Length: 304
Figure 1: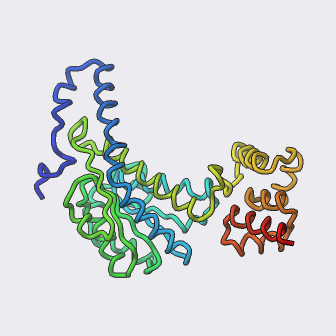
Figure 2 (figure 1 turned 135 degrees about the horizontal axis):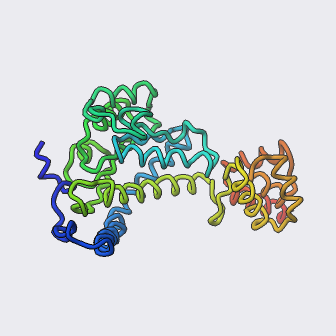
């Protein structure tokens, strides 16, 4: 592989003299380069939207999401996946992240792990990936053997396979059914893809996971109604959300939240006076979508 041919490895003409610059000038250069990232991601929004739609279709049938990568790309996948259970009360199995080198690689470089195609394939096989699942390979260069191995195995298993890369015409792009290619250009420090490339990857992952959760009914208006109240901060947030959407006194909100341990169920109960099995069954009948459940309830009541 000719590494100099990769967009992510080219030298940035705007920062040639960065080593002679003051601290302020250095961060001005970094900031100017960073400003271009969002516009680059904007160019591929239709592709990202198609990926989201296909994930949602599979998720409704029980499909899972797997992010897979090495180094910074793998860690960004872990960051996104780990935030889904507390933010949206998802099962930890729903969004999973796989990094070359395993847990050790989260904090430390594991030499050679990313160069092994078979290790990537094995990670997909041992998770029993199926045609309902989505596998998203993440790599700035689009050439990481570990990730390519995982994508190949996932393709053979019939999974929906997508990629997030920052260098065009890569093996990962060619392999993916949907390739999200954010051509952010050369880095401030040549080859330091934790910078602009990493920022682009983080933006795209934020978009994917957030939009999927919204489409699955885990947001009402712009409130995270499936937040898991697992610590004091999240307890307070959950209470505020319920109050905002019901107008109920704080003591009533606390009692309802203690009863159901669910923001969504608490809101639905306070807005409809449904309780227990009747409440849960009503929400389930509307696929967990609070807005649909409320609209249907009020429509039924007004009709009667």
